[in-house]
Image (cartoon, rainbow, N blue to C red; front, top):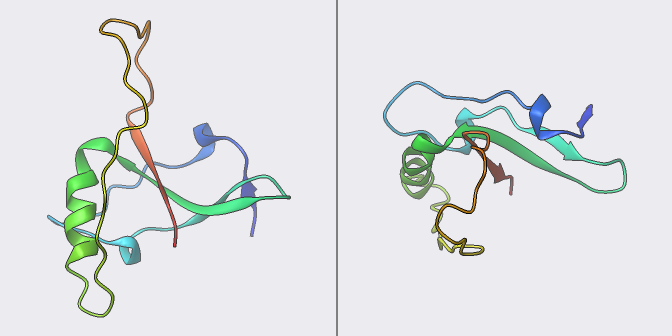
Length: 90
């Protein structure tokens, strides 16, 4: 399988339906030849639907701990970033 080295080359996926899980996504290898992870890119506004779908899986329910990485000062960003969220595979 090809390894994608830039997040700009990932296709944003937006599965139909109210909730969805990792089984509904097409996972790709992301990183370098030395180290890569399985990832999928989803729209930020669908993250809650993904979490609900993952937690609803009867065979293997998942629990999430949401944590902020760093706090930025108000108005510190000069431009908007990509609207996607990178979710690591298991």
